[in-house]
Length: 211
Ligand SMILES: *[C@@H]1O[C@H](CO)[C@@H](O)[C@H](O)[C@H]1NC(C)=O
Image (cartoon, rainbow, N blue to C red; front, side, top):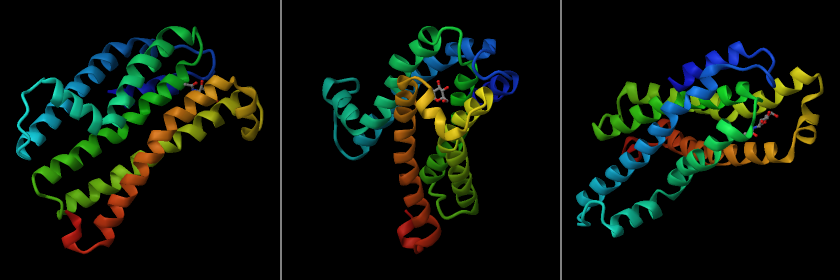
């Protein structure tokens, strides 16, 4: 839903700075509940995993919530950043500008179903199947295109709009836009490195290393 909404917004905003599309604003009604739900589901997942490992903590106890926050700190920070920082920016502080770029960010979600399927296949002990390998390639490609290449694409779209060379864009847009873009791409680069390392093991290593 996020990606389809993003593509609709991106295709309909010809002027990348001023054009508007209602989905860029109203999608918030899906995004905020989803992110909130996702944090809670990650907590439940963490709790069940630690039960299996024999760490018997009460559900929703302070200790188990704390160990969840410690272990999943990057993912939780990512979700909270979206909820606490990006949502107010997209809803209020950006004013009437930049629906196109909000649409671009929605497209980033395309890799998520493949990442989830990969985890499900591991749980079903299907990591040696063709499906898992094909899925792995789809993760690499969608993640690279929609979460890494997306950023140069946004800068290029702006450059084209205002008619300036791409390399000048970082110096012409406000500093806080560069900072926002940098803080968005930083965790993606980190996760992409992890995904590449996993892929190297999956496609290169011996079957014993694949698990
Ligand atoms: C990211 O960069 C683009 C292109 O220069 C800019 O228009 C956009 O506002 C930036 N994103 C954020 C969240 O500031």
